Image (cartoon, rainbow, N blue to C red; front, side):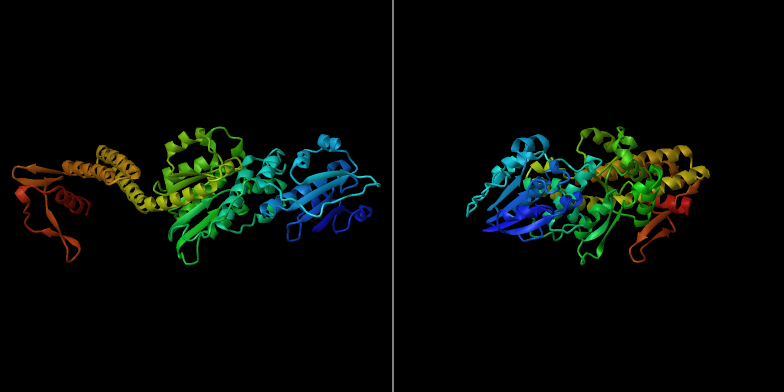
Amino acid sequence: MKLIKILGKESYFLDNIVNGESIEITKSAESIEFFTLQKSLENQTRYIVELSPDENNPLNYDGITIALKIYFKHLQEKLYEFEILLFGFDTKESIFLNNDYSFFLKCPNVHYKTLNFTNHWHLENHIIPIPKEEAKIALKKLGIKPPSSYKTQHSITNEWAIFRWSSYLGIKTSLEKEITNSLYFQYLITIHEIEPIASKQNFLPAKGKILVIDDEIDKGWEDFFKSLKFPSDKDLKLETIGKGFKSLENQEQVIDLIEEKIRIFNPDIIILDLRLLDADFEEKDTKKITGFKVLEKIKNEINRGIQVILFTASNKVWNYQSLLEVGFDGWVVKESPELSTDPFYTKNAIKDLKLQIEMCLSRSNYLSPAWLIHNKIKENLEVASKEKRIDKKISNEIKSFLKPSYKMYESASSKEDFAFSYLALFKTLEYIANEYTFKDSDSWQITGLKPLNQYLWNNTTYSYEKIMTPNFKNNTPSLFEKIASICFQLLG
């Protein structure tokens, strides 16, 4: 049997009540908040903890906080043969009146003794193991609250999700010390157990460019995502942005900084947190949230083919419709403590994140270059129309064909869907051919009353060659022969 006494600095006279190893607690609130037992835990250990180690604030009952941390740690390490004996001069009734966590005294293997100098303590030589599930049920009734330093639920969810997912994947993050010192997070870890997986190998694709945008990137998300990338994945580039957002003066500066990063890095996938500034948490209009405006910028101005996975602490559907109208490609909800009541949530959320990254990378491979071509055609049409090289009506008509074609291409999920998208492009070519070529008597002409030349592809030289004497099959050029002639004869 091991016995450890945890006493206040002025309580040396209490040290003689029972024999055992002593740990001295100083008066400062900081020493209580950051208390951790710097010893390897063992079964068959009894802890005797002074209820009020700070004699200047006897009603603080800081000994309960210390005892709770010990209790949590034993349960986390699955060492159930231990006992906590709190002692002090106060009655149990006083404790229940003056301490938020007084229900802890009703947890299995937790006892309280009112101290007087005639006490004779009889302690059993053997400790009965704590029934784990009974202990967890009792702990849930404590209602341990987050520290007042957390301004929003968003910050709590961020830190819990980082810790939870990192623990599951066996990743070390910069957040661990803060979590270890927090009574609230230690409580969550205790009641929401998690077993890490054996390996995180091949979590991220071996090739591609991923950008993570989160205002709390330095809290641990950077560690999390970069730990998923292996040194052997030389063709996978992962970068982050978000540190220092809150030091910028306004929303426009944040959006400009993000846009600059996207244009320089040119990612395939962006993992985007929606609320990037403190003001976003008070904003009720989704369209005014910083992340929403960044999504608009990406999809409407930069490159619609870049795949955006929204990475949010909210699963409220009122956000969904406005975002859907702009166009996002994935949605991952960060794990809040409430979601952890589902024992499978962590595993399923990480699996879903992995699948969405893989799917979005595959889509970006064809959608990003297609959008760049689509945009270049639009720009060329606008320039040609402005310079009177093409009729404005024709320019607008061609653009009206291109838009639905890309929309169908973007939403395609089967061979048939892709076929319809290409069919829309084919209709564009037909329209162009019909506008610029026509048959005059027995000969084919091109706009400007010029004879329609014939160009054929040469597989040896990998180029088109002009046929000196056109010889169209059945005296009718194919659609592609017409388009080739338009390109060479009108566009040069």
